Length: 352
Image (cartoon, rainbow, N blue to C red; front, side):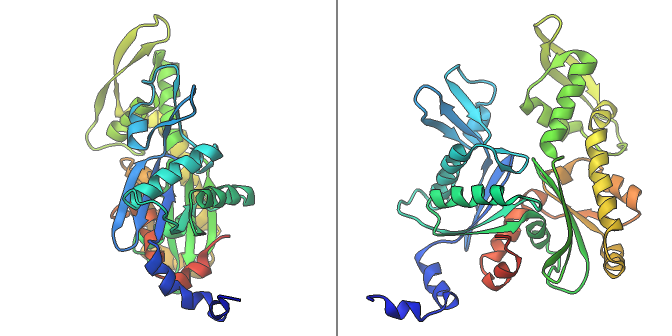
């Protein structure tokens, strides 16, 4: 054979050569936002997981931030699609188009790129869902695809000593899922993935205002309310916010003012579910690792970690130290990015 000499080399020996020929990418394929990390350059893409399609032609009109800004404001023939739901692919073809766009953007629009890609996924993803993610990446012209768990990546991104023989607990609250995990010696001792996260908090706010005030608001407004006055525990200083929407009774625009206690009530069920998952994880952790967690505390990552006083609420419920990662929004993609230069560790923690 023409390339017989290649077959005598192990994959490990080829990796340095392959890395020179292609730029490795780490992707946090999130329900709300997708972030891409390029080895040597850091985070090169941080955009909404959204695609605007023209239903009459099937052509992509916009991707990412531009598509999100069109949400709820499009003409009849334009539809904004969020191809991921609860952390997994809901629309295979649209995800492929979105990934292709982000990969090309990460490579500064260069053509004929076939990068090696590491993608983070929720802890309890099924084999069918794994296949959907992997196939989408290959169709987007990846040369090699590896899947890793978001909770592990969040822990690495937050700077936790995951390779050491000690317990580390991370709670990664994304848009579609919340992953709770206990990690030791580069392995996950306990993990649980909840389909309760940021998007569900937005829905809870929308439903609360519809039920109490007969006011209909959109997803963007609900997210803004959550960000500005949402909380998991009583605030030191009360907050209020004027909300504009459409009256369900009169059918015309209407504005109301709500305070933080009302939004906290709207979010109470979602927050309680997350807190209960944390308590269950602590109850299921081996005693030796429990002692480590008692000393080191719990680390919160993901966009949901920014909910006001969530750390205080978990601290009150568990009696353990709780802190928010330095960059909770990017913890997962930063952790995934670190794995790009350590394929020995990647082989140990990949979930294919």
